[in-house]
Image (cartoon, rainbow, N blue to C red; front, side):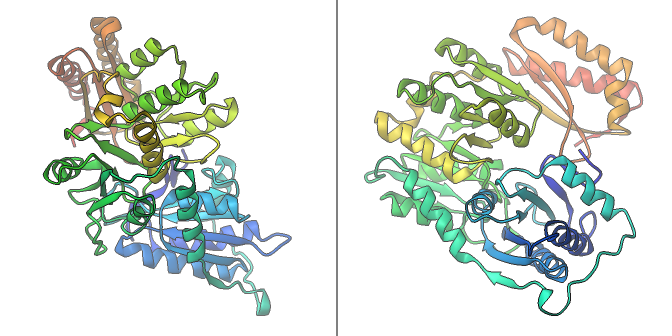
Length: 449
């Protein structure tokens, strides 16, 4: 990770950590970098945060001042920017979103012309510019770029999603929690077109209510919605719709690990998985690995971040990967996590097998898991601290093959994550608290968030 761009873009509180000046300068550099030798084309999307409009204007000003043309998808999802960047031959794409974070945060995600997270070497060059006094040349006369309304691109993405469904959703009552974010209009359009009786919640964004008590980070909203309306199942997205979690007809959560399990199983049984493996991150639940072992399906582990999952999938030709949080990638169909695409693939398993979601997810048993976020004096120093390392080692030895612990840096926030899995929640709590106590004893702990 660089100084500004983490695993999922340049993110922080609007006009505090990420300012409108940053956005203008990013636009200036991107327009200049991709405009050497030809007129650059950049496609931009945004979520519903109040500050997203401000950052969109600043990016457009920077891009056009450097001679690039800026194509606006308006309010849309991160995966739609990825799709259009690749399908319509753009030099790169930009998404303005802080994903599942509260409204006062925002972020700028750069996507290359293949629809993938931007290469580190390009981000390194951009960060060098942001920290320098380099003056880039301004475009002049007819060399100045223009801003283009490109809502048609968003509609083309919606059409692509609809084309992927293998059966009609007629006779299915489906709930959608749009998190007052990017899918507030798109999601219903897709499911209505596929014949579902679609019921929608959290689809009235006001610029301030994105992710507030709703979406994939507050699944209790969808659980209540599904049960009260007697729906067959429901899907919850995050602010920029690159995540999807589900709720079955009984109101039970179906997380990203369970979605990967049921999709891998369906794909294998339908003969479309071949020799592929499931690509997970180190945060995936032990229950997933035990369930995949029982099916004879292999798997690989990467660091946390869907960009690392995507890299592994590209390098090895794997068809399915993702994170417990709901970033699911379907190889050959997308180059990034896509919440709406994930919902469509889950519905494929449901409609083709004619089994409810509760049955499809029942073959995997989740191990209890406890995760606590801690703010420390210095992340790297804490990870290297002998007392903390000893506490982690002791916990691992005590759990053996029936559990694990994980201590890692957050890729998007200034904190450490302490996680444990074990046969009981009480055991998880004990191991996590022991590691945090070691941090406190060593003088590294500021507070548990």
